[in-house]
Amino acid sequence: MSIERDIELPSGRNVRVFDTGPDAGRLTILWHHGTPQTGSILPPIAEAAAARGIRVVSCARAGYPGTTVWPGRTVADAASDVVQTATVLGLEKYATVGGSGGGPHALACAALDPDRVVGAVTFAGVAPYVDDYPWFEGMAAPGGLASALSGGRDARRRHGETAEFDESVFVDVDWAVLEGDWASLGADANLASQLATADGGTSWGEIDDDVAFTTPWGFELSEVGCPALVVQGGRDRVIPRPHGEWLAAHLPAAQLWLRPNDGHVSALKGLPVALDWLLDTTAR
Image (spheres, rainbow, N blue to C red):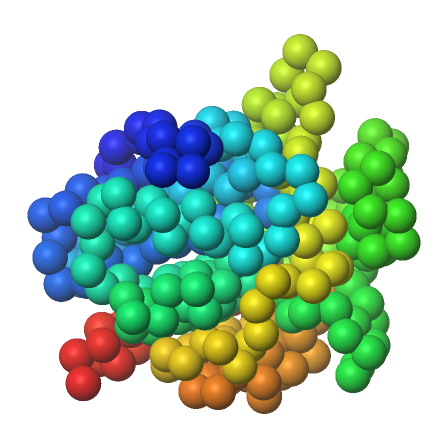
């Protein structure tokens, strides 16, 4: 179980924070949720961490339920909320972990807070938009990101008004974990969308994530000096394999953990091993 509360940062922004509590002791990780999620600490994350004496803190990103919208935010802007939260919570050292849309923000935290971040892990994380490789190739449903790239926030908002979920983005092993240990992930994504659009609202968190991914991130990967583990599914149809390979090649101290038979969600099955990697890395 985690504690949910809202924190007002020194900047005046409100951030919704989820925290498994300060009693774990061995290591604290700042979890960066996917797009879209509420930021709630999902049971498989909490359970894997608790089994290893790890505390988990998660912040809902700007525009998601409970956290102040930040029009035009960059990846680094959103991560700065998390860095400030770490200060408010009195964290002296922590690791940063992100899944899918949380991956860039996990790396941003490491770049913005090098004196405190001791390690970083990304699962199926987005890479910066560059011309070095076909960024969209292999994506089953690139419409949201493509609209954000071509027309910014307004175009991405209009796309969301008519877009429908394409089940082909997930491969068979993804659906298996979504019906099993990671069923909470699908339920949480649905909840995030429902809360955002309640009473005629707009999913600004999801929209602003996509815009931030396709524009300059506000930091360079070369600034991520801590050890990093890039976990990537070889069959991923949401964020394809070249993204993970490009990230690992451009981070100064990264290892690529390619899971050839996994898709986008099923790569998260590697979380327990990734947490062990963090404990081993931070103990050196």
